Amino acid sequence: MSEHPFFFTWQAQRGAAPLVLERAEGVWLHTPEGRVLDLGSLTYQSNLGHGNPRVVEAVRRQAAELCESTPSAGYPAKGELARALLDRAPPGFSKVFFCLGGSDANENALKIARLVTGRYKALARYRSYHGATLGAAALSGDWRRAPIEPGPPGMIHVLDLDESLGDARTQIPRVLALEENVGAVFLEPVVGANGVLIPPPGYFAEVRAACDAHGALLVCDEVLTGFGRTGRFFALEHQGVTPDLITCGKAITAGYGVLGAVLVHERVARVFQDQVLVAGLTHYAHPLGVAAAREALAVYADEGLPERAAGLEGTLRAGLEALMEAHGAATGERTLGLLAALDLDLDDQGRARFAAALREEGVHAHLKGPRQLRRPGAALVLSPPLTISEAELAEGFARIDRALGAVARA
Ligand SMILES: Cc1ncc(COP(=O)(O)O)c(C=O)c1O
Image 1 (spheres, protein in one colour):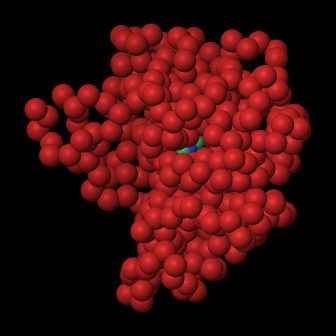
Image 2: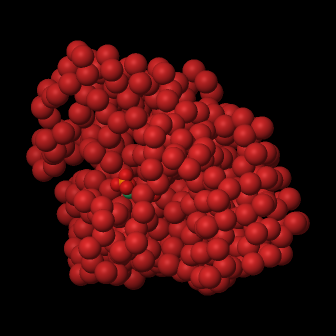
């Protein structure tokens, strides 16, 4: 048996070792082996960096004032957060359903779509991740779906944004027509964990029109891309699309609390004026998560962090291009705001060596292989805190450069 009393997620337990965190400040994680530069915002949630005193104090204050709640309760921060979230959504969004994180935000979006449309089918891409719970995992396209099948029936996948689709923009209109009775289409505005795939201009307009033509709700999964990551508050703003539902998690609290949310357009929300909303959770709008989110949103606005991410996009891209010039193994990049992927021509052994070299250099980022990319090769996904400085980014590139050099020499 593994020597640790807790499970490690998404892996066999033998030989698993934790990243031991002692404390964290700014973009730095402090571990017994030394400082680690966080170029991944932990699991994409730490958009404010670590130890932000405003958010820590807001959580402390909330804990002292009102630390527990019940789903039907009202308290000031709950309404204020809902209003702040709706203010950031496209026009027409009128209600928030609170939940515990990204997976159950998508789980509840699936339920809302079923309740509203009376249809059980949902469509997503093969290159996607929507969460670990049974419905959200069945909806996901990535490697984490197959081991738990059969999931709920009616989950349909399309190849959109996969390299194998060639020039075709989207299969969704055709698939919606052939399938009939699809209740919802779930799309990450930019595919995150499956390799940072940025849709071409006009892609979402085509999907929106197809959803309208076939009576399906459009759900934008902003769990990874929301809250400034791509240089806009929500990544859907790049495409100017108005979905029916927006699912949120991760950086909604900047990682300082546990919370997810489904933002609901008025045309959907109004159905539940008289129809029962068959959904709820004991920790619905838990005060500590709500307090963290409310203050995190205030800091995103006060410090102009989505704009900051947009401003640093060029620096991030230039750093990746320099790595491509210096290292034959670095073959391509995709960058939007402070979310980027560097494609790497590395096999499994090369990827393992690169992972070890990054550890040696003290870099935390997201190294993907064929399981996530669904193609041979590897990609390094970078998603630093939006507060990172130019100097810290430069330090990160120097470390990645040395790690790639070490792999080439091995
Ligand atoms: C796009 C997307 N949706 C949903 C989820 C699930 O979120 P959580 O792990 O917080 O439940 C993730 C997590 O990585 C994600 O990237």
